[in-house]
Image 1 (spheres, rainbow, N blue to C red):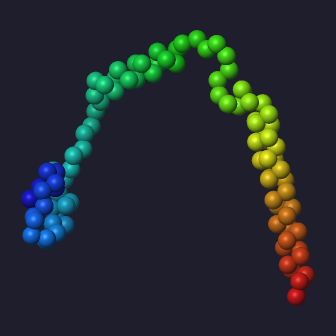
Image 2 (image 1 turned 90 degrees about the vertical axis):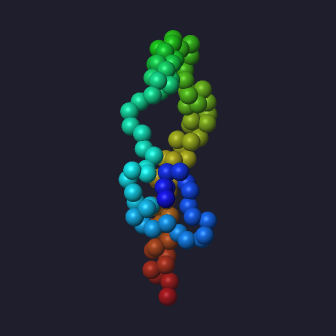
Image 3 (image 1 turned 45 degrees about the vertical axis):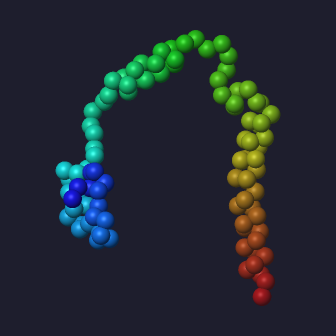
Length: 94
């Protein structure tokens, strides 16, 4: 019985652990393929092209960037403050 071919007995018995752990049946490939080289070359050529303007949402949407940054700063500032206030109130409640 070979794990690589995907053929298991139809009688309902499960394959043994030694059959499943056989290293010669593992479909593993190492190295590179020609299509990977072609995709890499295309990516390099794309990255070498001259840009006409700013790239990314953070440079195109200043109001959104400001709101996002302000929200993070507000969260970092007020979360510990609110936790401390809640712990003080809970520690005095009996």
